[in-house]
Image (cartoon, rainbow, N blue to C red):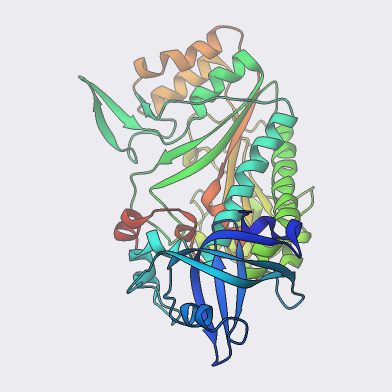
Length: 429
């Protein structure tokens, strides 16, 4: 009977066959321990010389990443994180791998990134991708269960929600087009039709990296909600992030263990989250000795880390100056210098994972903001239509998948969570 490694617990004491690769092996003159992987998990196979000398010699000669069918009996193993191992009684080699470059010795990050297509096979990278997969599943579960509809904005766009200085330019036949920075504007249109929507897709930023946390291509989850004020949106963000964290804790314990993640930090992530205004955050930084930040300037990674260190949960930094935020954000009625927005900063120095705001819903105000921002008014006529015909207060936010994966996994670099970032590695070492 052919099974996968993640099904082993259902077949204790039974004879099974697994299609797998050899991660590595160790042994002595009497026994060989084979570390097997099949894409669903990792399990040890044991070959005893006294039981079958020919099989033992086959096992002893296996090379790293050789593909094979391994047959044997599933046994419980309390010493293993996985809890099971296989007593092997047959090995059928499919392809003998020779000269696999990522050996069990230590390798530097540049070497591993240059071999990312193979590094994905390692235990830690496998664990990171499992956590990423859980976040994707939980995202869909959260929004579907809460009455949102998924929409798919275009990847090629004629305009940008953030301006044009960080866009990848291309041609759409005879017209200018750009790789999308965000699906937000299109999600706003969908929200006027369906009430609550979310998009989940790739976004692109043509900017030089400011820190190792920046990517030129990443995936973003962007909900938009009609009739939601800024405070309503903050509550959704809290609920969503709490849900993601708890789902990862519940379903990825093996992966978190492989990564040696301190789960006690994650277990504290329960709504509500603390909040601090941008103005108070600047004052806090100055009290802590930061002389490189003045009111009206955006925060860098060291500033965000210092602010986050005052809390044991994600923290909202609210009401940024309007001059450093996007044109579509609603003015803060309590302080017209600022807008109704918030960035959610993750603990442990992982930086901003969410940016959100209430959107301007007044036609004249938005039109003037587009003009003042130096944007092409004609290109935004369709966006203004949303305010011409039945405009309502509405809010939304965007969560960056890769940075969230990095935080929950506890990995050092955001780029480690992107499946094939060879180009990213070249541009942003």
